[in-house]
Length: 371
Image (cartoon, rainbow, N blue to C red; front, side):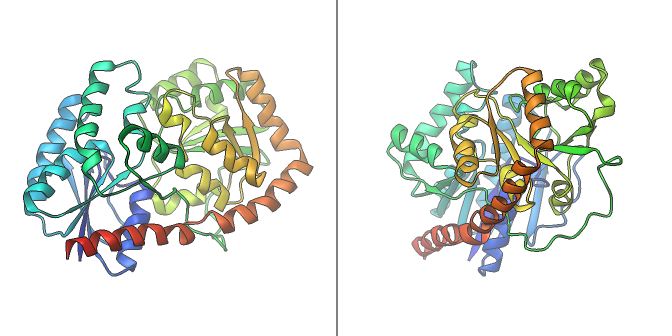
């Protein structure tokens, strides 16, 4: 059986798609991926399948989504596949139309609560367009899943559909390969953020907090819409010496950065339900690397930290308060020893090897419905 996966990103740093592909290929499926090639796109080396990335004329805004979906639709009409997986709402229209014409099976993976992303909050016209697409298509999809129970519950209330919950757990890491490089200068501590560098991630606050933190450096491993704004902020606040901007890191190299962190942060702001209900990849990467975490006081992330006691939860917009929390987490040896011990339990339980069975069962049902 052949499965075709569509996503609007460049695939290069998409851990969820990577895990999905690896699990499906290991289960015996033939998989292909269609994504997007950016002008600075790097080569794909870690996907055990064919990857096609579209080079587009438009790279953002309504014209980008229109161009991508039109080109994707015509590709899907002719690609050899039995089951089609649409990743997020911005690939759903093309997949749905192609599947209807070809009478194939569609699976939907909601990586996030798309109509509640910060970029759409307060933009009622654009948001209404996406919600119209969602309302017309989503209730007709038989096989769908998402990243957290809160998002699944929201879709149940909104459309009466029951989504499977398949979380962004990372692969279990029982042995670590030591990095051939060091992020640390001397004995300084590393506070790590990894992931998309977009609005509402708490990164401007984290940068300002570094003015008040001794013997530490903030490492930002990722790229996104506000990266240049953050670099300008760090320069303006004379903090470039305490901030390291790494840019995009390939999936196969990212864990070497995670291992070197003393704290892993996920400081999403409460800007719409997408962030409120988020359970991001980075949280589980930190856990697998044995890194204590600092997260926002948002329900899904906070529940993981509370359940396993693996770090702290914070709700603040004050750089000094955040800096005080950073310093306490770095310097309290009793807390760090307890967190490190608890992280071993969390890593054993919250791993992809235990989560992927739900993914494979969902695709088994989808494939059987196609036969």
